[in-house]
Length: 399
Image (cartoon, rainbow, N blue to C red):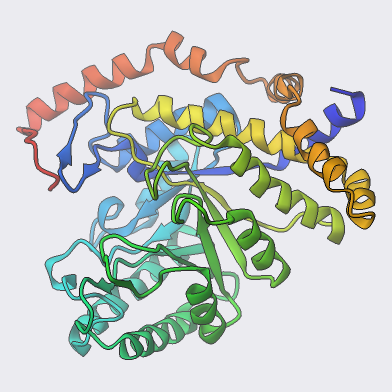
């Protein structure tokens, strides 16, 4: 690395913050079943402890995304959870309502043709906004499993209208410094028609909802041929890019560790963000959030892998020579323009990452330090003992 690129990369890393998800530390699975891990978190305190471990080792994960039904107890003061987070050196980040797991949502939540079910879903999301205010969260992260499996099953336009009505009402509940982020997904659990299937649908919903509604892009929520960086570039230009969920996929929404399949794509997404900032003279405020669940990899280790890869690819994107790129683009010099990106991507940015970690008194190798500390072994012993004391048995079902 040149001294200039080293400096740019370190400066970029200093401002790069990544939110980890509480659910990424607990036992999770597929629709077919779960594969349990001894060190998996039992409760919210465990999740926050694991998140604190990741932040302590990486120095860039100060907040934790939470799910309302999984991380808060109805009737208890949400501030207790925020206090618990601070005890582990982190803060509560995005608040995620849950309107997809209860039986009453079989036919949808905001799109449901039963007004009573829609009202219940709305009340839960409204309650989630109250939690945001209590824990000083800025983002309401919205994902819906609504959709249909067969042609003719429901009125697509009526379902759209139901969503629009609910989004508008929910937007009115937000505080002046709060945002709702609408996440899209092309399929699953609905396999014929999904009510928020792509960025265009989310864009329409957001524009109609109000100015504090933005689009949340999940790397995994796309078909294989989708140009995700183009979507990011468009949303940035329209001031509608609300956040980025970090993961990777082989097919779609596979929740794989970042860069395990296509690191160049993640680099290209980060590059569009840096290129936008270079053109505008200011880096946009973007919440970066990990959204992964792992059956096979140890939970904390997988999170450390993703964070380390995110830092590596973000630093690479930060050193692209934008002046040279603009000159090549102006002359329609296709080869040079491509090579400018490739040069940054193939640059070894480990000196910049090492400098960042040294400046922040962090271990040179977070994963190695995690293993040296024996954190997982200690957590497994403690959590297995508690499971035994609590009479927790673990079967093979997803429930």
